[in-house]
Structure formats: C-alpha cells, structure tokens
Image (cartoon, rainbow, N blue to C red; front, side):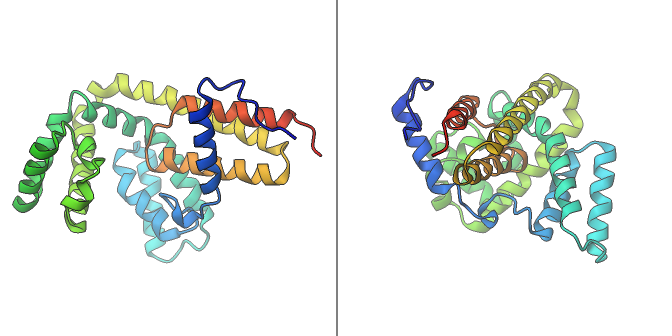
Amino acid sequence: MQRYNGGYVENLISYSLYLLLSRLCYTCRMEDAYLDLNNKAKLVDFLSVWSGLASKDMKAKAEAMVRDYDDGKVEDVVPLMLLAKAMAIEIWPIRFALNRFFEEEGALIELDKVEKSVRKSTAHLIERFRINSGCKSLSEMLGHDDFDMSFRDEERSEIEQVRHHIREDYWKAHAKNLSKLVEEGKELMETFQDKMESLRLIAEGLPVLLQEELYAKVNRFEDQCFYKGQTLSSEILDQELAYYKEQEALPIE
C-alpha cells in the first residue's frame, strides 16, 4: 500500500527527510519533553516561573496552586496539568511578542540590560563572545554553535534567569508598546490550536500505529509551542495535516 505520493509537498526531498526524522523521534518519552506533564514538581516550577506574565486572575490561581502544593495539598497531577496548559496558552502571545521585539528592534536593549545585570565575569564573557561571534541579539548568541562551549553551566543558567526577569519587567513597563505583536501572537495561537485539534480528529480515524504516531507528534508540537514558547512552522504543520489526511483516506488492509 502506497502511503505517500508527495503531490501536496512542493519540496519532496526536504519534507521526506523531515518526515523520516520525525518518525524516528515521535516515541520520545515525556521526560524528554521541555515540560514533563506527569511531574508535579516541574509543573509547579513552570507556574512559578511564568506566572509573572499572566493576567491577574490567572496569576492568583497559579500562586494558590503553588501554595497548595507546598503545603502538601495537591495529590493529583491533573489540576496542575490543566492550570499549566491554560496559563501557557494565555501567556504565549506575550512570550511571542517579547521574542519578536528582542530579536529585532530591541535586540541591543536586551543585550545591554543582561550584561549590566549579570556578574562582571559573566558580562566579560558575553562581550567577548559578541565580538568574536558577531551575534546581534541574545537569542542569536544563545543559539550559536559555540555558546555551550564558551560558557559554563552556571553562567548559562545565570544569563537565562536574568534574561527572564528582564523580559518580565519590560513587559510590565511597556505592555502597550507591544500590543500589536501580542495581537499577532493571539492569532497565531488560535491557528495553532485549530491545527492541533484537526490533527487529533484525523488521528481518531487512523490505524493504531499511525494514530499513536500522530498523537505523539501533537503532544510534542504542543510541548514546543505552549511550554517552550516556540513559534512552529505553519508550513510544516500544514504538511502534517495534508499527509495524515491522505493516510486517513486510504483503505485499511
């Protein structure tokens, strides 16, 4: 039975490679995800770290849940999972806006603020790395191939923590200036959720192995988007939809 004819993909080679790689890793365990949804401690950490970007009501719910967990009152992981997902979806447009702003027009602002806020030794390493690598933004620097070799674990952690607090403070002080980017982020999140729902509906009509494969992909996509804060390629998601729609239409042998 031929499952793939490539008629819906403009670049057959690149998508075939992507599909192969995605199948090799679709069975990744939850502990390999950015946020392990079965781990109560990690869910609580997520709520604690990101509640600063949440609305007043959501922040209050997150803080109350964290208190209950600290007091030993949270026995079931499900309420934590549901709240973490709800908060992640709510704050994603803000994370998107901050990412876009600090990758473009605000790149130097973020670099300057981070350098001034970290320890002198770490600031010196940042400045030297910027000069040698030619990186124009902190995002570019963190994603550089040589970054992990140039900074120790504690220095990388320091930079990321300082960056998080700087972005949170910037949002609180300049939310109105980022409103257009936030609206763009809301539209992207709605589109992403619609596509994830479509993939889940398609999965219901697939053979067991393909169904498990697709559900695993959806979980991974949501992990990368909701919790890690990434903006996933709309083209890749459309290709996934097209591919699994084709599989759904094939007769089961």
